[in-house]
Length: 318
Ligand code: TXA
Ligand code: MG
Image 1 (cartoon, rainbow, N blue to C red):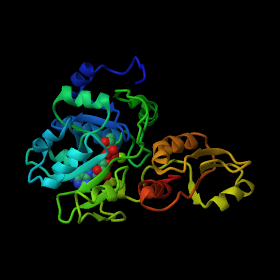
Image 2: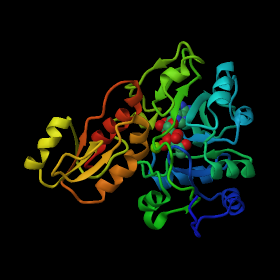
Image 3: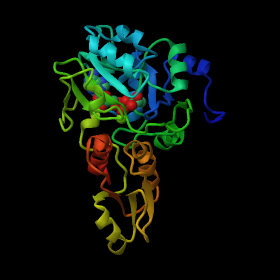
Image 4: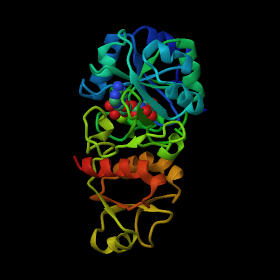
């Protein structure tokens, strides 16, 4: 854990949240922008700071699976088994909401997204706070999710809220989301936990990535986007790019081709995911003409990474 003197203690963080304040929190996936999920005004401040449309629901973060019943109703047995198997961890469950869950949290829908994050500081905070924390990723709407406290400060500059600094996020991309409110259940967002790991619990699980329903903001085409224009190229094309595009920076797999400038990420899907957003931010900060990203492998292990890159490509340069 970094020794950051501006990071509040757990007791200070609880006070802040109980007073209706916003707090950036570390999780194993990305940093979240948290508020008391039962405080309608505090939750409204999340939407205002992010510039997020009101119909995009927020995930409620809870301390453990025992709190499922505080937020959800008609909970299928599979949801409890999934929570027992994967929580704390990068899995969000969409369930029928209890009538008393504020509409501002769920975007007016009859479902609520619930997750217990696997980070020691945030778990300590949730236990001390005892309620739920509504928290989207702590970035401006459509931009790259933050995986360090410094990224959160870069996003919000003078408007930066208090940040509970828990160091760099270990997973680096957002949680897998499964919708259990409908039959058959569906994956709404790919993440570190894959379809194959979920199938033993949910034999009928559909994988509907590419469904562009506005219910999941991560499923909009443009998201996770750098401001620098970005293109994806094969390794072969990337190797030649230095001749034609001198001010382009590369995001390569394993190693940069000789004579090129940029960064490389490991050819392991989990390690690539861990470094992806930090790499995009670093490249975006250099005022290059463009970012050229080497096409990652395909296949089930790379689904979540390819999903994030596809959306970053769609939104880049704007
Ligand atoms: O890993 C994560 O999930 C991170 C950390 C902070 O927990 N959070 C995160 O939040 O990625 P956000 O708001 O950036 O993305 C949450 C996604 C959104 O696309 C939202 O539409 C979807 O979850 N979502 C939340 N509640 C939902 C619901 N009731 N039905 C369908 N989708 C929902
Ligand atoms: Mg987000």
